[in-house]
Image (cartoon, helix red, strand yellow):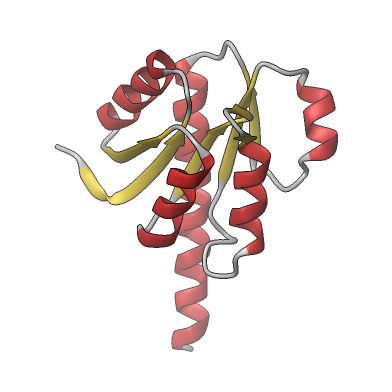
Length: 137
């Protein structure tokens, strides 16, 4: 049974990859929304409660870096974890994208992605619980 309390936005223009990632995340109980370009991704980010973003770096007409900047620059979603997926050299990419929560290099093991998603969402959940404790005090 899917847990619709956690929604992951997967931004990938290769149907095979987005389908594989979505199936694996759904098997873990996550609700998944798939987009393949900047425009539709921003629409989802503006209208849905997204708990985590997984974005390919290379997309048609723009890229995952634009999506990363959008998320991190908008106060209401700036704490949303972002995982960038790339075929580029991880070290070069990391130097220019220190704002990403994680970077995975293609090809990647699906278990590595799932472990990373679970860890990032667990950290987010723990931080939210701490914030609620301090507000209640």
